[in-house]
Amino acid sequence: MSTQSRWRRVKAGTAATVAVIAVGGLVSCAEGDQQREVTLGYGVDAPITTYNANTVSGALSAAPAVFGRTLTGLSYPGPNGTPIEDRDFGTIEQVPGEAFVLHVTIRDEAVFSDGEPITCDDLVLTWAAGSGRFTSPGPEDGESERLFDAASDWGLADIENVVCEPGTKHARVELREGRPFAEWRSLFAATTVMPSHVAARVTDVDIVAAVNEGDVDALTRLADFWNNGWALQPGELDLSLFPSSGPYMIESFTAESGLVLTSNPAWWGDPPRTPRIQIFTGRDIREAVGRGDIQVLDTGAGSLAGLETNGFTEQPVGGMNVEQLIFNTRGIFGNVDARRAFAACLPRQRIADDVIAPLYGDDDELSGRYGRVAGSRVMPPGMPGYGFVAGGGQQAFIQPDAEAARAFPELDGARIRVGYIGPDRRREETISFIARTCSEAGIIVQNISSPAFDPRSAMDQGEVDIVLGGAGGVQGPGGASPAAQLLTFHSNSPLNLGAFSFDAIDGLVAELAVTGQQDALFERLAEAERVSWDELPSVPLTAQPRTVASDESVVGVIPNPTRAGAGWNMDKWVRG
Image (cartoon, rainbow, N blue to C red; front, side, top):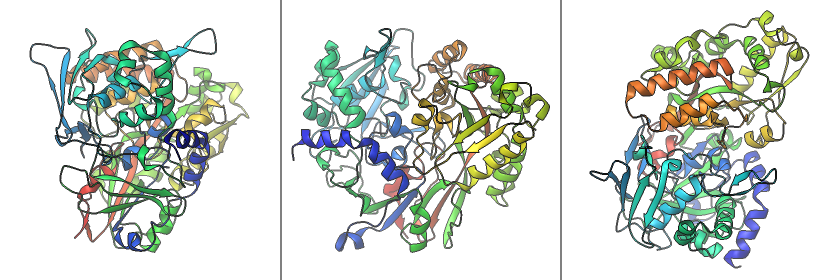
């Protein structure tokens, strides 16, 4: 089968892929010798839908937590949430005397698993896809639409140009005048740099030339592949579309065998300590743990009812992502008074005390830090500066107030539909508490969770009024810098699921991108929270509680509170 034919089949099957993977967990790996060689199983509570974590569907999937050591970059999120440079891939440095120029050097030995060198062409594709610069006329009133369905343009929108001599290992990254992006060390990080040579081959596009010339026809073909061509469809898998730049590569992905990562023989760094990792997701995690097929687990705390982890070492984690109720402003919650009235009936303190705090067990320190009501949407309790940033929001809507909730009569008798990927016992309990207290104000809260729930589609189609999840609606491992998470409320952000729009937030996002001094950063974040408590794009609940568990025989597992999850260092996992 030709690569082009395979691409057409991938594109046609994308929607079905999402449903299949979300509903079914990943089962046992290949038969025979391959079965015996898979030494560690990894369970994570988000669906695997694509290799490209940079698309909206990818950002909402497990891709950031699964492919961090398959698609490497100039850095990766460390266990304290800050980026760690990855010199196996290359370096990024400020050019002396040029405030708005960065220089990237890719390591000479760096190649993809198919033998193709990693070059500056790959950086050009990353920038082109994520910058939001390339558009086409939209269907209504000629309004332009972005060609690339990138989840975030954080930092990439502030790049004016990536100067690249095709096929070489160096790039000059020129920032926009007056826009010295503060988090420049996190540019071109793990999972963001996709194999441009694959996209070029399939679409017959000279990427650097197309970007430099602004060739809309060529860029449209390129974007079509970037958006859809790396979808993971169980069954036939053309591995030539999925080369790796890390210690692991995809071995197989089928409905029968699931997803298996194996050692990449072309990897030039330290080899992974475990040759194969088998990935389990969704409802299959509980059964896989029971069979002894999972040795490392990263899941929402209290989410999987009946999960028995005897013989595992459990580590409760307060994620950098804040669990929140995100309003869909396309319907009844397009009125801020409706959002305020609904917020008034929320039992936020009781949710923290009775649902979240017990998940941290007898650890009073963790419970006191993370098991309390969050006053910020972008910064969980316990982070430096949290008290200042949360400000007066720490006391807002703590206890339900039925009388205040009745202030918006259109909510009386209204059915408010709340969605998330389920079954999820913790979120189910959260919605049950909300339903009971809001019923006292005449508001009916309906839980419409499902295994195949798609936060973006459900909001776009008006199927839900609220999504319960982290910033951007992320259901599994999530979290980035507070400034980057505020981007999910920017009016042009694809992860602004509720279509919230407010000029002051847009302006603060633009300021935060170039704010490097910590006090100034906290001041702008605090102002963003003041605006958000007035306008209520969402209501924060608590830090997103996570549980990282590993078999007592496994060493090297270190929790990570960001979108990278426990899989951030999977190449260091090994049975002791």
